Length: 444
Ligand code: PHE
Image (cartoon, rainbow, N blue to C red; front, side, top):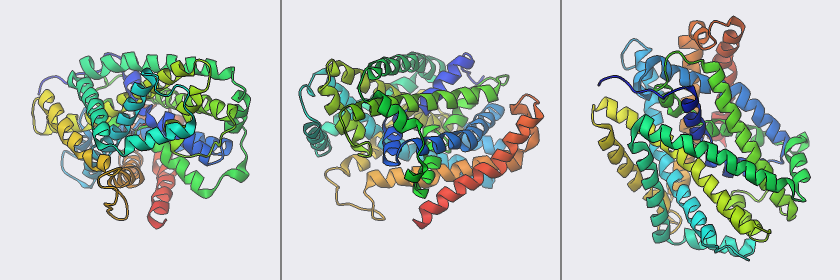
């Protein structure tokens, strides 16, 4: 198969991995679940989860990839004496999650493209939040319109991955990630001047524990997983293209920091607008698509802010989508020993077609339910509520018990106290937290 390609350096890897982590999870989902769960106390618990559950699993995934220089399935087999074992399971589950997640992610990515197009053509001008909510409803009811935007989103994703690690992923994330940071900071500068800015800060950063429910705590654990792209081998796959010398502790910290920083920035920007217009912070998933353009449209310069905002969300969604597709490409091109470009087109096409199940669940197949869920919710729930946490649980146990202290020492470059910390986090703390979430989802 020849020499395995590598990222050109640590920064390139950090940008690509941060690109994977930072996505719809940060800009769309984090603000709305923080809003629904009462703000500050939820944010505090979320930060704790990132540090104690997300970070150790993130570092484990990158380490397992880097050490084995292999795809998500082979990595576990290599570390288990080169044979198929029980530990191949997280690799296979990751493949299924990748296909399921990208199928619905691409549909939402299509909505973002659609809203981007509408802001560029100034269609939100002078419209109220209620009118924009109608636009959202109209879009969901129009399968042809959604199909066009989904096709474009998936086409962009495939095109970015097509060039490979260096000429595809690395080249694009190097442009998109800094652009995203600049755009978000520009929006932050704008929000500081809004009346609602200080209310947003106190909503997000002064914890009131009476507002936090047990379900909110569980949501925080689950979200720390989704937002860091954990549990499906995306970080493992990216790590497998990383040179063996890199310092993983610092790298992992940097990625988790960037992801958290962007989520908090997005939260501050969105809530500054929400509070400036006396809106309800707990308005749920519609917050970004329906409410925000409506609010922006009424602000001076809001038309342009809306363009910037949806471009930013589009960048974030694309750099996450490519990492999901890469899991399948690395696996299939290595296992079938096929040309990467052909696999990219093949896997892209399969996922593209699969996405019509969630896409039609908003219109033609609205009434079609499997286990009481439409296809969109079924794909989302199966992957985010079950496959990702179970995958993450197994990865954590694998790192903590199967690999153990020697490997943790490699991660920390021989620093024993830190290595012990990592080992016990992956052995006990993270698995218990994840197991509680899975249990709660199963019994709920
Ligand atoms: N982390 C991405 C987000 O926040 C989503 C994602 C999940 C990407 C799993 C890859 C793997 O939107």
